[in-house]
Image (tube, helix red, strand yellow):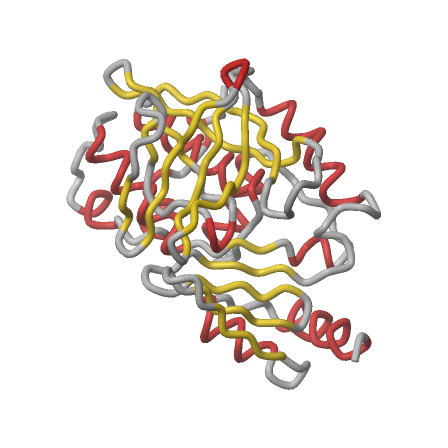
Length: 279
């Protein structure tokens, strides 16, 4: 389903900092400990970014293209790329992986279309939400789906899943003492071909939040970081948000320092040009 047989698993493990397993020939098993380790390492190592959309380039979702970009070139990606890569790796290890389509709920009461890709991984009969592609507010680790309402602590951040009508599940984040909805998804399974369609909208439609706008996120441990347009936001678990403006002269340094993202010289020059043109 996810073309895991085409993935260079050793290179992926090295990219996310689990190269010990690759170097020492340890066998990764489809158990909960491995799922936690891979999910946590992936979200820590690979930033969320949609720079190719801003640069006017197509976003390819075949495994080899994603591997070339996110693994070998050291880039990041947005949800379709991130979770397609994670799904391929988990499938290669032996996990049962299926996709879901989610509605973003971080923009108040607005009813948004289903544009977010998430994964459900089943371990010993229990389903777990896995998502490496929701940006700075997303989970760093798997979240259990079989225990609605139960709070799950991930370091200084706390999540829970609640259930609505018709089996709709909602991922929530606790910030500043208040539970906030992140996104909702139904039991309907999504397949890679469905993400191709959603990716086309997200990367080309003028109403997409990624078209014409710089978006880079990272779900750090104690501080979550987001650069959207010219505004850099540092989000804290207690609800505090520090914001500052990033100009064209500081852009590349901020991408490197805050997100661990370094671009090829040509891409960097074009990105700075676009950023400066909007001043």
